[in-house]
Amino acid sequence: MTPSAPSSPSSRLGFTEKLAYGLGDTASNFFFQTFNIFLLYYYTDVFGLGPAAVGTMFLVTRIFDAVTDPLMGAAADRTQSRWGRYRPYLLWMAVPYGVLGFLMFLNPDFTPTGKLVYAYVTYSAMMLVYTMINIPYSALMGVMSPSSAQRTSLSSYRFVCAFGGGMLVTSMVTPLKNLLGGGDEVAGFQWTMAIFGVVSVALFLFTFAGTRERVKPTGDKGAKLTSDLAFLLRNRAWIVMFFAAIFTLTNVAVRNAVSVYYLKYFVRVGEERVFLVFDHVALFMTSGMLAMIAGVACTPWFTKRWGKRELLIALSTINAASMALFFFLKPDQLALMYVINIVGTFLVGPTPAIVWAMYADTADYGTWKFGRRTTGLVFSSAQFGQKMGIAIGGSIAGWTLALFGFVANVDQSEESLRGIRLLYSLGPALFTMLNVAAVWFYPITESTVKQMERELAERSATTPASEAGTG
Image: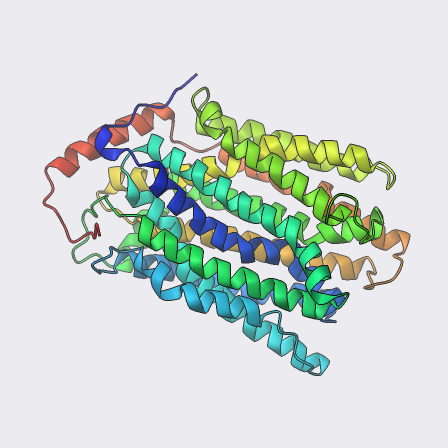
């Protein structure tokens, strides 16, 4: 067992600040989870685009989006303001984020070509703004405290709030669109996304007001982006986490994109309410999200007993097994599907918090090895890997549906149902095991973390105060 080292009082973060930080990911997930779970379905079954065209669009727009991540991280690392380096972007980008998220679901009455162009333009613009607010938000965790234990705790708050936002998406999208649209899915999605947009803007502004940057930048003067990238490529821990990010998010993107299809076309659940305002689509995904939130909340219990690397490998392997089981289930085994989904998502719950704490450790590792803190670039390049995974996964989902003969809003052929089942089970399980293989080579142990904290604190004590914002 490798319990975390205690934090010094000066590095300890209060409940209110941790909550304020966490709610920023609630804001992100109002759109991020909606896109992951419902966007492919919306484009094919509501907006009327073909699955292959959507798959290609996901690949093109998300690769463009991913390429902007390191650029945004480098820009944030070089930002100087009275609010710090990363916090001001929460203020500047909040309103554009909310507006563009709504415009994606405006559903104009264009020709098929016009609709595809509109989807390309609005989705690309939205993801650019998402990058400009989410990269600095993610990097902010690395400079709120120098303590790895405090960052792990902060990461736990973040992902409880993130999955809380995800739970609101899974539980509210279908009931809200049915209620507000009165049976019209177009109007239902429009009103639902308008509400999500307003709430997201308010939460990002609260995160901006409730957080502070405390870790001083080191070795910044005269540094060039090419030098920073060279340091990054020499950071073995970052290379491992970069590939792990690609495999993990490919898994997530594929499975989330076909969740609605699996329940609607294979299990054949309808829109009738089965619990309060919930239909089976909302209830199945919400129960899984609640289990994941419970798993995230247990992260401190897990990390006090085992190292982050070992936990990530073990929990990811269990997650892969739980997903693979779905390929062998029959449509009438819905109760068993609930049980497997709840157990699997609970056990995988701690992994996002662990991963983001490992990214912060990776930033420290680069500072410790090379004397240059590039927190924004480390986090943004990690998100570059994640978005590459989302691009690959989203395109795989759309192309595979087309390959197996999917046609929207009709009974599916056996071939089409086989494709949906593969996308929901064995495919994501394979990518999860590739993630496990990558993490196996992660070089930072818990003893290395303690050594880095001690030596970086000693260096910081002899470094003059810099321009990092604290207000």
